[in-house]
Amino acid sequence: MNLFADTWHMAQRHIRALIRQPWWIAVTLVQPIIWLVLFGGLFKNMAELPGWPEGLSFREFIIPGVIVMTAFFSAGWGGMGMIDDIKRGIIDRFLVSPASRSSIINGRLLSGFLTIAIQALIALVLGWLIAMDASVDAPLPGTVMPFCGTVVPAGWAPCAGATLSVQQNAALFAAIGTAFGGNGTTTFQLPDLNGAAPVGLGPGMALGQKVPGTIDGLGLNYIINTGDLLAPGSGDGEPPAYYAYAGQVTAYAGAQIPQGWAACDGSMLAISGYPTLFQAVGDIWGGDGKTSFGLPDLRGRMMPGA
Image (cartoon, rainbow, N blue to C red; front, side, top):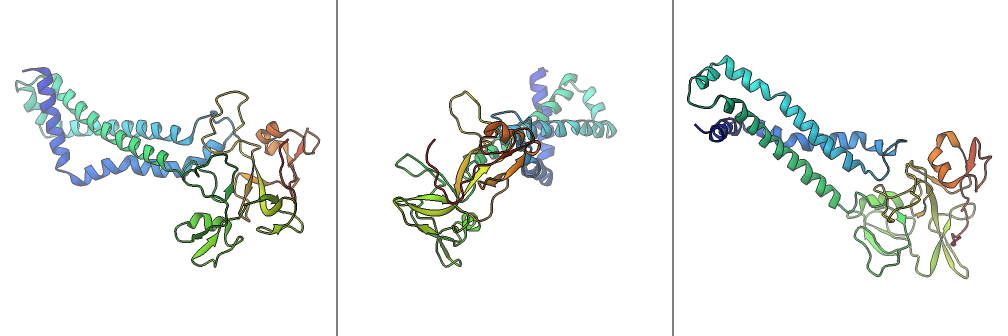
């Protein structure tokens, strides 16, 4: 008989056996999802370690890893079915049949390949869905950014004092609370920067406090990124996968400084603890440049261009 036809018939035998085990099908399909969620949550902070390849997002690292791990795991158990067929005498029957002997192995390999291909497709689709989620690579909830466009991007809202639902914007409410208004039970408000500019928090300046002047001010936190992703000196200007370079300063409408950031309050830091940040900002803001360096002090200040 034809080798390819025999191989396909043998593969169909294994596929039919798999279809008769619905629980095993469920485990096979769910396995890459569990690994992607489990290892994705467990090791996502790897991207913040020194030496992480520049421009490589954690998703680009974990999804191929899950696919390869799934393939190795499935292939590792591929021989167990063959051992079972040998013990039950099924292989002996195939050997005396007209079927090609190579098809006995090739059929099992083909069925295993189809299973792994489906698992890989699930991992890729799930990764694509995560990538399409606007919140994944968006900055921290409560981050305030200038924007020169006329259409507000998805996942963002203009700082115009709008009243939002707590239930529909739980993450943002957890970050900024009712510092800018709202009853704190069902509603909260965004900062209103119409005709105003952020002023760094400090003595006499509270979060959400309004300051009259030639340009009115609104009390917000100025924070600086302390991560390990250094901005490249060349390139096409594409933003980093994790939304911030070391030394990037932004206004923040929350009271608690988020992880991976520090308040722009002039603090002195040890170079050994923040080597990438020191490489980015140097000792412009203070420190001896050998063991310590300073952060910019934006308390009670607005931030004009250099």
